[in-house]
Length: 480
Ligand code: AMP
Ligand code: ZN
Image (cartoon, rainbow, N blue to C red; front, side, top):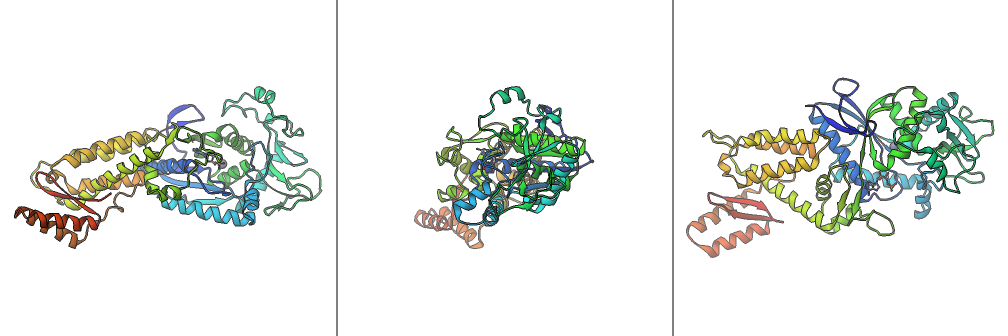
């Protein structure tokens, strides 16, 4: 099936075709590890995980790099202000290295909790300093850089198509330039590829700036600019042209524009063929901000009784290109939806392996394909969820004797493969003892021994099991 993706580069929903047959190179801009990620930050990783799963379901072999920005991301994207890591270190009375190690570990645990597939390469910017220096050296040799007091900058006027990707109006940018912007910069849009440690200061993270990137021979300590990190890691691990690059919409005008400029200036070829950007998540219709304290952590949701997978369901309910809205009511409905899905998944323990009478519900066979097709259509997760709801409602309302176990389990496995909601793993069969109680209760009911039937029902409830009597059988479900 053709995978269609909205490509920021063309502004269209394009048919996806990788450079090499069925192999895909994918780069995801990863976290800056200076603080706890909030629910908004997680949105991107959930959607790009769905992208990987969708490509895999369409028989592509994905090689994916995700960076960990552990140095060089400044508080202001305009190349001034403090390094977020150094700021984090001051806040916590630790070194920048300790802060990076702590939040990297925290982030990776969060990925596990959300059931996100680990990229083959999770690369720390500080492990790729040589590659970044080499890239700066190549840009210098080609005449794209200039040096000023606080660092080495990319001269955006030398890259003719600089404004194209984000449709920037550079003249307007110049007119609106902030008064405090670095007056030594030749153009407002020029950006640092390498910054110098300010004179008289010592940073936790700094490296000797080698003479191949310097003008003049005064030795200086320095550190990479944020944008150069992603270019260097992508180029060195995935090659000069990659298939897909992902990030948040806020990355379009600066970070990704700069990645394109410096990568293409260095290699002379197109950096990436498909650029995908996720929209942002709001909370109660408002932007997430420190002052409003609405950037919840996963633990804060857990403390209120919501699992990371409940949150993942909430995210998947919106399309990645539309603005999501988080409210606790929405989270409660996502949780309910997942709970209902799990109870449907548990039906596989209660139906027969094969059906011989020829009147099985064949629609189950078609559902897997329809779900994958919805996702292949620019990752239409709301539509995929709707299709699953429809199929599950039909299954839940049908005579279970007509549901064939094999295609039903296959459907659950497909849903898990593409959405990662762990329906199969989270729905174990009940114990033999509980099954025995269900049988005893049925027998009590047939004797019209209601007190005994109620007693057994309560015993099951204590084990987290609810029984529901339908016209032709008793079904067990997980209690809320
Ligand atoms: P920050 O920690 O604020 O620098 O955010 C890191 C990245 O997380 C940003 O570049 C965005 O792409 C992403 N991000 C931040 N806030 C949100 C949000 N509310 N929704 C989706 N993504 C976000
Ligand atoms: Zn990046």
